[in-house]
Length: 180
Image (tube, rainbow, N blue to C red; front, top):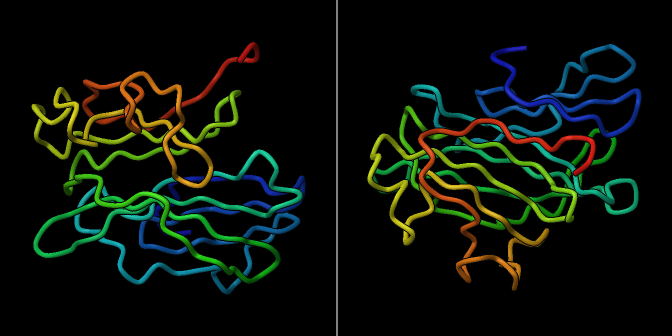
């Protein structure tokens, strides 16, 4: 594996691993499959950024939804994109962008995806090395975002936007304790 970043288990014998260079690799029964499940061609890898987090939907066993976050360059700027696809066996299908144009930079592109106990998708974002963006409620940089599984905004979010928490430098992890 080349700079593995995120790991998710889709079953007790199968895991997906994100490699910073843009590949999603499959390990089945303890063996790394030779061919990547998918390679994101537009991933930027000039610094700490790249293909970062993976998450599976809480009902993965029935819908097979996998989520990924990665940094890419567009029009001289760096952004993070969150995508959802169906991933089963050795193929993927139905690639859909659920959130795009999260400000990023070679450093502080931080992105972690996790479903919370409320069934919502939480996304951490870095401040794109512009710390004032973390305090700006109009920017997606330096935030904890909370989304429905399709990328829409939950009606009970505190600011009426994807914003759940703000003022973060570069969060790269998120988890819940056993009590939720």
